[in-house]
Length: 199
Image 1 (cartoon, rainbow, N blue to C red):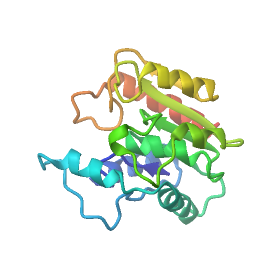
Image 2: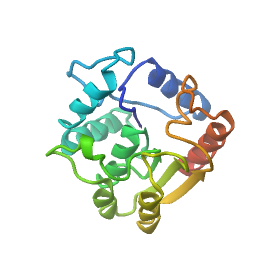
Image 3: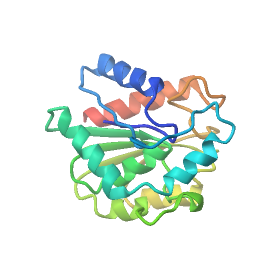
């Protein structure tokens, strides 16, 4: 299962799912965290701010139920989960559902950013505390303002396996068009994550 970033399900993630399926032989599915909501595109100059406004209305229970339902649609008993940015934050939260054996969060927020907080949201660390036997890995860059060192240390204290990439900023793996993309680090991160998910 793949949970997209703040820009939602789009061709980048359709291609990512297809690529993962081809590389691994696994069934790979995703879903749109903003389904049914009119959302601005990346070319909208106010798009990010408008999406942040929509984030406040997201509800953990509903979004995580969508993740579990999508996992069921694969027809697989054993399901892993990856998420990116906002999706990485929800991947951490999904650890409490009991549906996913292994979860990898790519630079997911460890605390809900203050601008994103809404009444239906809990903190990722609270969800992690109730994860049972679910194993969790986090991929982070040391220069990512969304995953500050103190929060990353808390992840480790919670028993999450953290892989740090020195000098990497936010979003350095999943979108090659981003200035933050680091090809060699991205390749290494995917190698580690796929080995973790297959374990």
